[in-house]
Amino acid sequence: MPQFPTECVQTLSGHKGPVNDVCYNKVGQYCISAGRDRSVKLWNPSTGLHLHTYSGHGREVLGVAFIQTCFESSASDNTKIASCGVDRAVILWDVGSGEILRRYTAHWERVNAVDFNEDGTVAVSGSFDATIRLWDCRSSNFSPMQIIEACKDSVMSVQVKGAEIVAGCADGKLRIFDIRMGRTLQDYIGPAITSARFSKDSNCVVVSTLDNTCRLMDKSSGTLLNEFKGHRHTEYKLESTLTNTDAHVVSGSEDGNIYIWDVLEGDLKCTLKSHDGIVTTVDYHPSDVAMISAGGDGCIRVWS
Image (cartoon, rainbow, N blue to C red; front, top):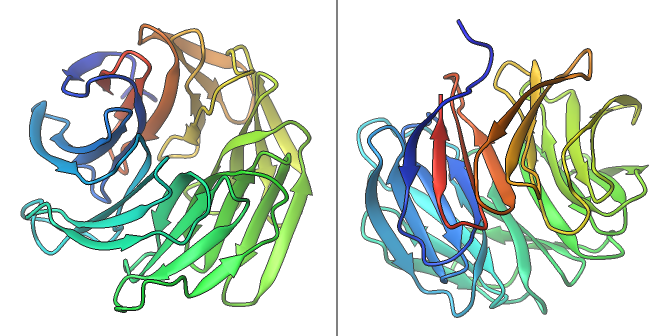
């Protein structure tokens, strides 16, 4: 059994212009994408089928998220997605009907990233206005239920896991907010952070920074466990992630390749020539040896 995907098995085309973000749903049978063309698109990555386009943003869409709860039978079982963008809006969509359920507009600047808590009751967004805002998806109150103002510069990425939010910030600090305990862990990395994601076991965070480096950090102690180099990352917002076994780190790159490193050894295992232009976003399948990538060429590639 291969340890990581090396072959492009599908190319999903439909966006007019670059794709800023892609992500799988919890069980991996669907994915969504955010485009500079102001649209969010829903796909079946295994068949390559484009299922729906969600239009409602006034400017380019920067981030997307699925509610993490399982939905087995179809893409329309009361499932919601969230998107955010340059129009400063966070939009909550009904997947099946495509209708806008909520539009949150309290951020002052563009919204870079969005995620849900596990049961989909709270959406979390990070913005260029240096705030993280929490939104009650069930309430008819469209004001944020909580505003976190600990960051000193643009919040580039947010991810929610359990009661914790990990935020990557352009001020070069990695922050983990424990909402239940009201506690903040903060580690100074240095260069601007464009992406921060928990490992599957939640003990580590993989961090992408604008100095051609990915770092694996121990969550509780803040210890640097390993560094991963070889890709190009000095200018744009790029994402990195861990595979679903936590054995490899995967990152996009400004040279059009995907880079895969061994977590323990830190050595580069594979370079996949993947896109024309920047590879901005990668997401790994929840259970299979598969991943999706997208970037400046407007294509989404499915790997296995």
